[in-house]
Amino acid sequence: MALASTRPGEWLTWKLYDRGRRQLASVVARDLRTGKIAAVRKSFLHIDSRVTPTADGRLAVEIARTV
Image (cartoon, rainbow, N blue to C red; front, side, top):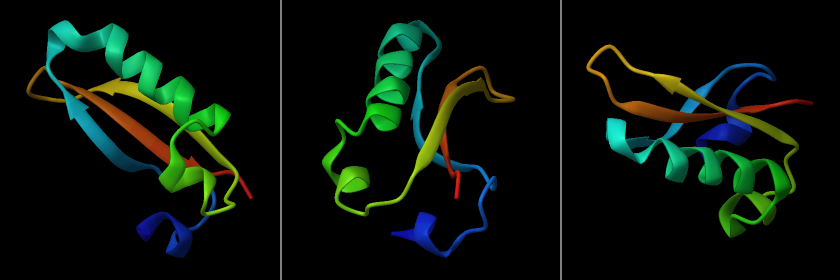
């Protein structure tokens, strides 16, 4: 997983969603934070996540290591 080799606080894009999928993007970001996404949970990394707009109008779910 690329996240394991990044510095804490360095944001990486997890997934991109179309504008109309804001609710889904928010749910995915929450599930990443709470450990409901198996790939992140099994990595044993402490992460934070957020939803940010991109230049082309899509929504990016981003994750970063916290420690």
